[in-house]
Amino acid sequence: MSTRARWIIGLLLAVVIGLAVGLAIVAGDDGDDDPTTTLETEIEETEPTETEVEPAVTETVPDEGGVAPPTTPKPDGTGGLGAE
Image: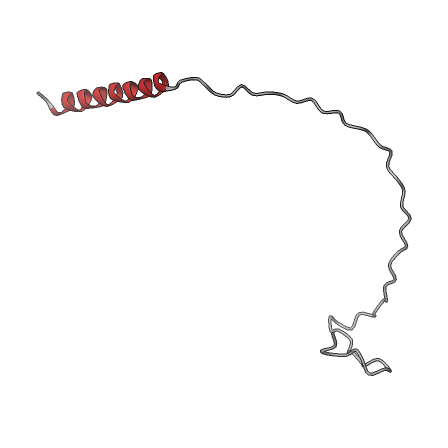
C-alpha cells in the first residue's frame, strides 16, 4: 500500500471518528433546558429638568514660556509648596 493511500485512509478514519463523537454528544443531550421567558417592562418618560450652573472662576496667568509661576504663601502662613 502506498504512503498516499495510508494518509487518505487515516484522514477519512479521523473524520468518521469525529462525526461519531459529535453525534454521541448531540444524542446524549436530554433537552430538558429551562424555557426562556420574556418580561415586558414599562418605561416612564420624564421631562428633563433644567439646572442653572454658575460658571467656574478661573484665573488667567500670562504665558511665561511654559514655566509655572512661583507659589507664595498666603498671609495667614498657609499655602505654597508642600501645603495640603
